[in-house]
Image (cartoon, rainbow, N blue to C red; front, side):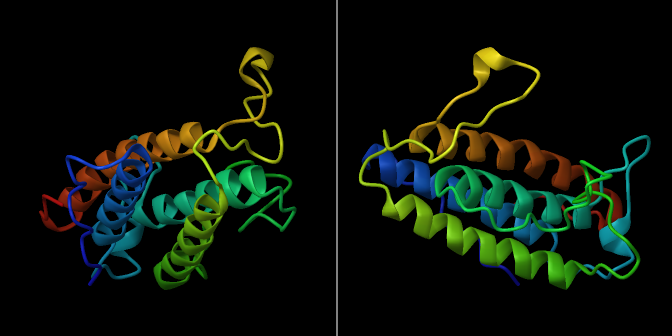
Length: 175
C-alpha cells in the first residue's frame, strides 16, 4: 500500500512547501489506486469515460511532459503515444495494466523530482516553450515555480476525480 505523504509543513520556505504539496497529492492519487483489481481500475462513473487506470497513466504523461520534456528539454518518446489519438494515455487497451501504469508513474515522479532538484531557483525556466497551441498569448517558457504550481493543481483536480471513482468502486473515502 502506498504510504500517504505527510501533510505539508506550515512554516517552511517556498520551494519546500511546493515540493511537499506536490508529493502529498502524488501520494493521494497513488493510494486511490491501491488494492484494485484490473476490472475495478476500469470502472467509470457515467457519462465520463475516466477511470483510475486512465488517471494514473495520464499523470505519468503529465509528469513526463512538464518535467522531462518541457523543463529538461528531453525528446524521449511520450508514454503510450499514438499519433492518431491525442488522449492515448486515457484510452488503454485490455492488455494495459494498473501495475504498469503505476510503475510508469512512479518512474516519472522520480525523474520529475530530480529535474526540479537540478534547478538552482524557482525562477529557473523550462528548456522549451510550452503552452496551448490554440492560445498564443499563453505560450512561452515557464519558471519551475509555475510548473510546480500547475502540477499541484493538476493532481488536486484529478485526486477529486479519483475520490469519486474510488467511492463508486468500493465505498472507500478519504485520503
